[in-house]
Image (cartoon, rainbow, N blue to C red):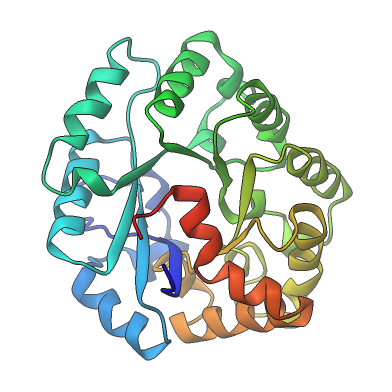
Length: 283
């Protein structure tokens, strides 16, 4: 697959469903519907061919809807959905989802781990069993964690060395408050497990929304590049969340500039080939 891929984007409609994380005045600019008809022209304008649609809430209904969208909109190359990892029937749920229209595009599962009160939620026995089932079905598991939850993410990656994990948003480093060494050290420890890829995504919204540029993001991109290497970095826009900090073009241009600083190998592989490998996208 030679497509250029945006490996992290979302759709939602607050008039039809509840998004607990979207509360507060600061998020008002994105508290409106965003769908495939909105994203398609942005991909074309920015030289991208395909995307990976990622869950936004703990809902099987949303996952089913996303699979229908992927079935109807060819530019959606894959869906990272949600299942209840603590459910003893999680395997049957995955099989049912795969049998739906668009089910062949289910490539991964994600849960908003950083919203759990327990920093070790990923290490709970019932959760670990659910992750094991998801991985046994050949799916990738997306790690949505911050620095606090990275130790549990490291333990999960080590527990399943033959499986595939993707770290979302480089674990959301606290860019607005300055470079954090604990984040950096834990990122290096996670990357030491060769079965984890890292999305260069969601960084501008971790900076001060009105005061950031590629140079501010560069130290974080450089650090994950040093840790993960050219074969395990993946570009994602995090649209439409990214609109809080800048336009789709501004976000893509800044991250592309950061990757270009690392060399053509990093840039070329992050915009498609690494996403294909991490998610086993159909060629």
